[in-house]
Amino acid sequence: MPFNTDLKCKPTSDFSCNDCRMNAFCLPVALNSSEVGQLDDIISRDKPLQKNDCVYSAGQAFTSVYAVRSGCIKSYTTNSRGEEQVTGFHLPGEIFGMDGISSKVHTNFAVALQTSAVCEIPFSHLTKLTGVLPALQNHFFRLMSNEIVSDQQMITLLSKNSAEERLATFLLSLSVRNQRQKFSGTHFNLPMSRSDIGNYLGLTVETVSRVFSRLQKLGVLRVDKKEIEILDIDQLHELSTTTD
Image (cartoon, rainbow, N blue to C red; front, side):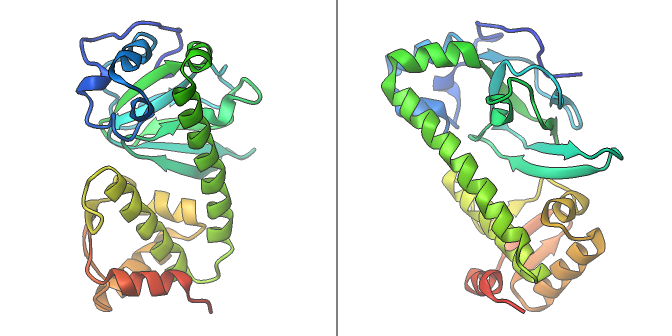
């Protein structure tokens, strides 16, 4: 079932943007304290999502964009045979759901990869609010621009010939995104499975596991199930830019 199919205009709990550790990275970063209150008034916060809970489905009417407070959300599409193609992973402080802005219908599915908290922001209300809060409008446009850049980077990533390049680039991206949230950029857990990583990078799960093992033998990484420690980030950068 979708996370929330009814348009809500009030928070569902006493939790507010001012209470959230992600407010320095999400939409409130562009606002002063009184303006944050106006944003709070349009946000819905339901109970936490559990693993595999659906936020929205492809074909569902677009009404809202979403912000991740905790956990991780995976977006994906399916082909005519029902096969899944992962299109992105959304971490705390990041906005998702913008795939439906143009057609007014979501083109992706979005599901929780682990217990996650998500804020729902009704788009019609957000549009009105950005009209009176230029700083919010400018920041939202920057977020949309980041989505476009991310899509372009993904195309570039999939054009790389080497599996090592693809995985190294992916890990460096996670490192940067974790640092942006004031988390460690060298020691973190992967919320997604090896299978999801392979799907996203255009690799088999066996290849992903083999590359992880190789990077560990080279002393670039320490891998313990989903726990990753980058031991040599300079070498990881080198691997991300080399070609066959």
